[in-house]
Image (cartoon, rainbow, N blue to C red; front, side, top):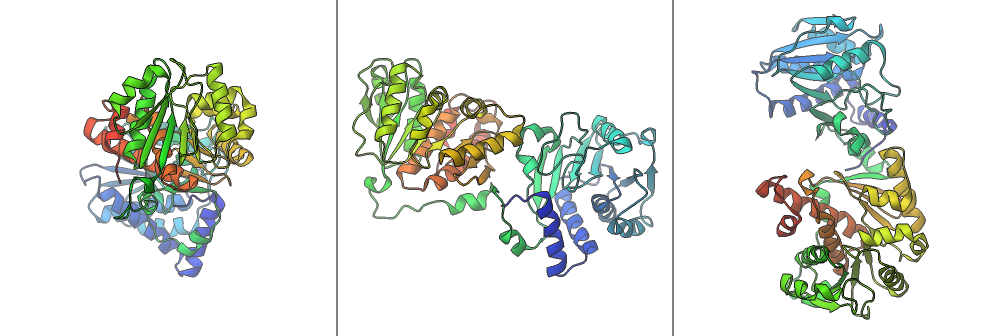
Length: 493
């Protein structure tokens, strides 16, 4: 799924109106019907509904939604916020239809707000995706009162006060919905951690906007849903053998952190690599042999840390970083590895921190090396950012400058390609915020690279499958109880 900017969203509506053809009023009706269909699937007619409408097209959506819900037996109250004398044409047309069916109250001051009960539903249709400045005046006061109200808040298309594709100021007043029902495509704002409270659980409903326009629209932003993830699966042919699926090589672990080597290696083995060799300090030898008999173990001459590595000629892909520490001899080993490597590479964890402290090594990274930092690791690597939008731009510039692929981990992990394109991931959950989850991702990515997935597809597909396994684990163990090993146990495609 593409993620379009605010101007493209406006043009997408216009293209649909012109090319289908369809009137803007009927397009609004279609969007409202899609919203109501989503609503009916989740809420029965026992809950009363208050719809707060602005005077633009988002308010027009709210009026149409009110009329349709009323026709389906829901008890609906409508409140129009009189912050302006002007109203859009489609709002006015919907108002004329609603006035005969529902009692409408106009609100001219904050004190005129109604009372709410705990099980009430509030539908926010105040402001849509075209917002270009902070909310102020009457609208600001109304939004504050809605946020204080008990019950469930649902925003139509986007929370009122939230910008589509740029950062809000911390002082901005924005609706805090429990759900956002957005039309056709997700918004860039939904991907940003800073906006979590302003999106709630968001849902995309298809309203039949112009598919050719979407297909032809240039954007650096994409959302990897199930359809996209499924298309990346490589089939395993009947007469394949272990050599067909590559020989993965993982360098991981140090004294006290051999668990990182176990997790990344087990994830690699469970992700389809034909062969796996793991290089660990001497102290990890017995642990690895017992934990993963399917792997071959390469033992460092140093007891506690990785200081060297075997000949790299036989390996198809290499992963380095989980639990390796940052000892000087380990730094030297990474430097030597970068000098000799001729196969795809994934760098994570301590290896990323080594790059942060030794930025001269960045210029030695092979083209399309995959880096998988969490936000703090990325900050150490690329520097401070003002907000998540700024951090995303920083990551895009970093990926282009060093010709690397970045998996910037988070709720919607952003896979940033060497050309600056960003693929946000749809899978995963908060239960994966547990020690070792990143090590599991390293193993998955190393395995996919060994199987000759392109680095781009390995990163996008690996992140998707990592999150999907986490979702399966959460279903079985709950988000609270699951651990990184549960992610490994639920891998498979």
